[in-house]
Length: 203
Image 1 (cartoon, rainbow, N blue to C red):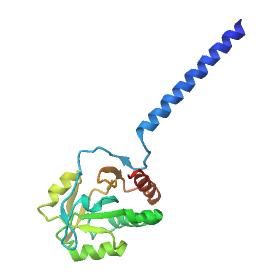
Image 2: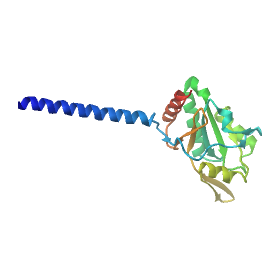
Image 3: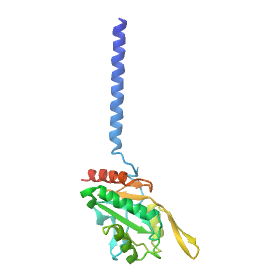
Image 4: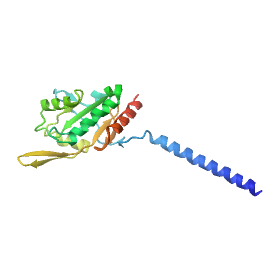
């Protein structure tokens, strides 16, 4: 009698564990794909931009539909942070293989006084000719930064200056929706994995 009771309790426990496992698996499925970067899907900022590129052409996110867009704010005379971010993007694009053609890097300068269109075009080409630089005017820059919740500040250095700025890369999916915020420390391998996931989700 006692043995049958123990067996019944054991069966109930197994059923409870199976039910708990099913609930956990369902919860994981509802959370969607896991990303290495911060998933900011549904964020109410960074919806779009309207800025001219180095050729004087007005650009918006709609121009890049069908591609994942990696958006970065920086300045040409940045000694390490900006070039590191761009080199990571180059490496991630290479890791994507043939899918790399569906990745678009967009660079917005926070130093329009010095970053002329010709300078930015040459700088982008040094990393990848497909990378695009955008040029807000001094009047446009504060609003663009506010739209993306990006910080920037001019810091005097002797007779010149440098710029402090947000080092986050923003990623849009192929439909132009803001999806990820990539921290500066994230590796190219993790970046490529996240972009590959987004491309795999594309319609």
